[in-house]
Image 1 (cartoon, rainbow, N blue to C red):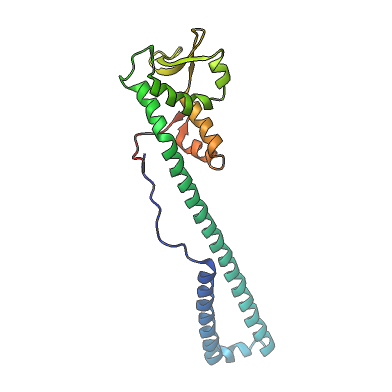
Image 2: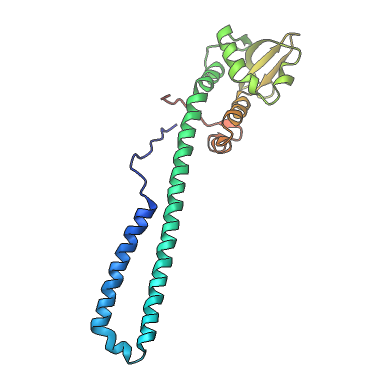
Length: 216
């Protein structure tokens, strides 16, 4: 998964940008006014009065002010979007740092030769999986049932080419659970503001789109 790096360049102040733009436009307007009064006024007076000409000048200034106001609002909106984007990227990076260790452990348990089919997890791995994953499963109480004896890894009951985690109940029963569902529920619980966006961007059809990443 690619690392995200935000630019350190400061976001320009919308008011200062609008002020500079207004000054530039006014200088251009003044230049135009001098050019018009020096060269084109005789032509204008052939078809409009002084009052009409002044009114036209005032209308032009009004349009200029409206334009600058619109640009100022656009600059404010752009600044807000930039700030909101930076907040999202910071939160996204924090979520990754939080979930990657347990996600990496779950993937290693399932997809490496660390455990054979039907083998129970070590006490250390069981404690991590139970405390960081299972407890957040939407149906945790139903999964545990009469009590948790251990956690094991074995073939999925319906998809034999895949492996999944199992709750081994105190009465000897086995029931599978998805660590991805646990992760989604954990993110929704701890990061409610950005959980929906994170899950939408990094989970696809229930599968977490995560690869080995450097944890910073």
